[in-house]
Image (cartoon, rainbow, N blue to C red; front, side, top):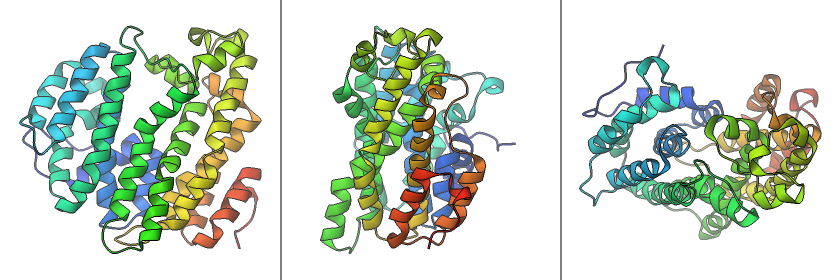
Length: 355
């Protein structure tokens, strides 16, 4: 059972924030758990700040123009130079919160935004300065997309260019956030430059994999269609019919096309992993695990893209997740490529060990 939710006058509460990450994202919880302090705390708080915005952007029960207003209010509340308080955001979002008995983990985090912000404010100034700009860019981008499709009642991505633009705001900014944290202090400029040049692709890879595998849930639960209309039209499919059984084969080809776009980010994402410094509690395994699981998901999508269009969904097995977790704990930069090659060809738990 989760702890009691905080009110708008909350004090910092790292334990509540850590518990919240465990509840809202199995994948990101794995990352936070294999980081060490202080990086574990920094990434945990950065992620929760983003999750508040992401939950509002995905809220199909809120009028799009109200969604945008809430996002702008939240963004202002995070700015040290603005007069808006997190209490004002909390009051503005209150009418749109599901009843407590029906509230899932994502909405618990939105309701607990004052505690997230209070805990974030407890971090060192240089950490806050590293996190705020990419979070601001993410929120502004989400608000822009909500406003762009306000009359549609949900996002309807038009073409590849717009898909990449959306994925940048949703996840490329997270790559920048991670880089800002890791590039603080005394690290070689060549390493920092490599990370800055590949951070966006690391985030895009993870987001494009999500877009490819979550088509059914995105449309049925959030009324969002991220598969580009241009690609669906080439198959004779309206976006509103993306999950219809009669269009299954054509939509599956577009799923595969989107997965191929994700696959195009693998090399630069690998370069990013191999360049990141292991300092201040950062560990290679924290970022290798989501990378390898993305490779595994692309493998599964290659085998059965049509499952992304149904309740069945596409994901790697728990056995593979546990095997990757165990092996990644002893991984090195020299073995990233081998992990990728193995998982691209077969489930990791069936492949034996990485040398």
